[in-house]
Image (cartoon, rainbow, N blue to C red; front, side, top):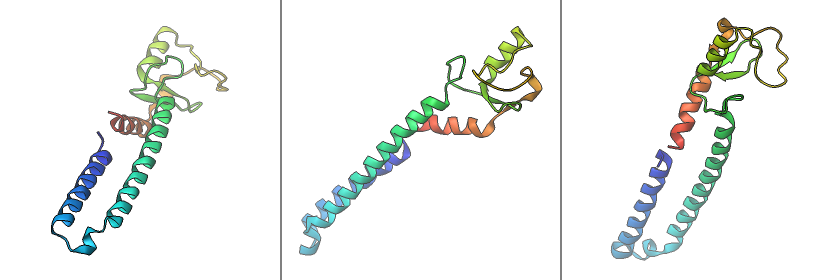
Length: 138
């Protein structure tokens, strides 16, 4: 359960407690359930939107975290400065050890020349995004 879900659960529990206390100890204006019903409806709307966003994030996550030619999740993404494509660091390093004259493995890449170790840079921003996105789904 992520932080937003935990907070939604706390708000829902607090609302239920408030309704019970209002019914037991409140005056007539507090016993009117219309106010509480509208709050619950708003919470349900927020929850629905949250689930929609979570599904979109999951789809985006699936698209962004798979290594293009190895089909493994990206752990340490490196960006090729020549063509801007991203690879999993360990995969591209192994590929370069096997064949130093490797071209960008992304189909249709227009980059001239070979992938060179000194032109690969760890994409820290993408790595942080992946970590953050994974924490949402775990």
